[in-house]
Image (cartoon, rainbow, N blue to C red; front, side, top):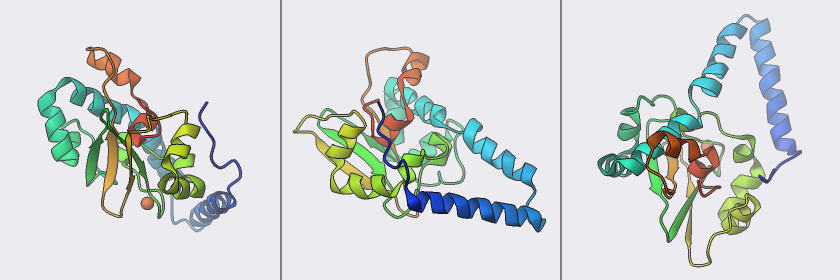
Length: 195
Ligand code: FE
């Protein structure tokens, strides 16, 4: 069962209220069209999302040249799949191996590779995840149900104003690209799940 890090995070609730207050103020003052706002939110909820990232991962698993390109220049290889734009200008792809496991956070706020993963889940933005995953990554990963061997090198990557990260999980058995893509989850590409 996925662990919920922040049932009642007061900071988060305060931020949500502020966003709502701002939105209503801007609509009331005629500064923003609610339909336009809905369209933007809908785009990031439906058009981009973890399916994009999963397609990238599955291609990398089945095409060695693409994989090499993706690890060398994430943004360009991802743009080749048609996924680019805001928050995706500089994406670095991190390869999980039998000895290295990567997990991504943004300790300052909630930077996230939108073109490949869509909008970040609430837990990713929570103060608890951001602080704890750096301090005690193994404990946090265990709460997500991911228990790594003691000799696995766990690397925590802190997003910056410029760079976003995407984790390339270890390829499971299988050869069909569509079937492989269906196995990849959002958490697998953040690093809080194996796949
Ligand atoms: Fe951030």
